[in-house]
Length: 528
Image 1 (cartoon, rainbow, N blue to C red):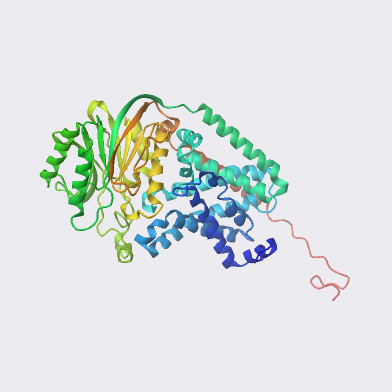
Image 2 (tube, rainbow, N blue to C red):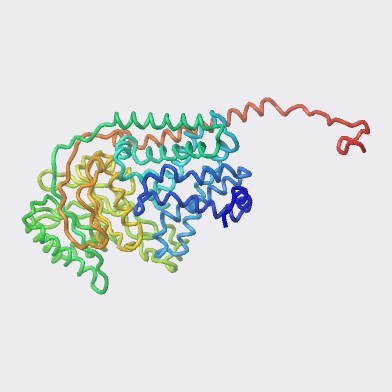
């Protein structure tokens, strides 16, 4: 049965139908990310959500639609967690979805009815700024980190990557929301199409100018990096079997003139100080392939209490002493926040039975021939500030060691691998994303792909000729300036509203006008 526009409007008058529509509208942007990777859809994906919120009968309902849309968005971009966290995934999505309630309220405030040119101009700055505040807050590690930032949907678009070098993923998110706002007005409000179109033209002009002006990385050398991906290895003795498989794959690299061999996250399941036999085997491999090997140890340490995930560099003589302990841990996957209150999560899913320990600082390591590398572990590649700090500290090559073995049949591996392209473009430094089970990928200093991905069905070693570049990108130099600009825009809005409210209070209440009386003297019921 085909529903008319009037039928749809009547259905949206129902709180239940409207709530379902908000959840579905909020989930739509997920199609912009890998694996679907419909990058162009990000420019219109928010339009249904915006149109729904602007039609809300009250400001309170608009905030509610914002919350439900946020729930749909968070559930969509984290759907691959459902097999691990079960119902707790819904709880997290509902809590984080509330961050979009103020965004919904602001959307109705500026776009309801027939907005004026001034309201549209304000919306093109205020609504992207409010969206950036949501992304900023939920980027905190304890809330799950910056997974699924809207701008990261543009990881494979060369002009967008150029803009990322100017303002990072934050600038891309800001521009995408601004475009969605303008398109929503073009679609819904005929009387306001001129200012909306002017907003689109201005956005295009500003981004084109930034694209032309942004400096390109100066490529001045190459290194040969080998990635070893053992694939899925289950069953009893999995750690020993994995090590043996990685050893076999690494041995195949002999004679290929590689500068560094990179293994994935948790590639070594034993502390090397407790297992000198493994350290000796790694040193022998290093001599055989004539290159250092960066492994990742996930084990209880012998020199301090607790379990650490650590990037450890091994050379021909054994561990070199260069080590990086993972600083930002995956909530519930590697530790349980407020375990005394939320420890029950371990009984409904695969939450960490014991908290991993944190490292205290990032590290830049020296590899043979003077190459300086900056390692990160797992979802640390999602944090723009970590790669930026490594580049500022002198890293010439960024590395992320990951696993993703728990999410092989989902969209998570592809999405995780795509994040390295943004980190490379932001910093002007090439980046290697090496995993246990795929997807492994390498990107050049402009975020361009180098070679082919190692997919989730691969158990192989691959050598990549990686271009090196020097120079400092605007993002590496100035950091998260789009976030600060968004804060300033919202502060100006708050100050303007405060000043207007103060003027109203100083003017005092309007003089009371006595009610008009009819000839019969009844102000309430004329004629009586």
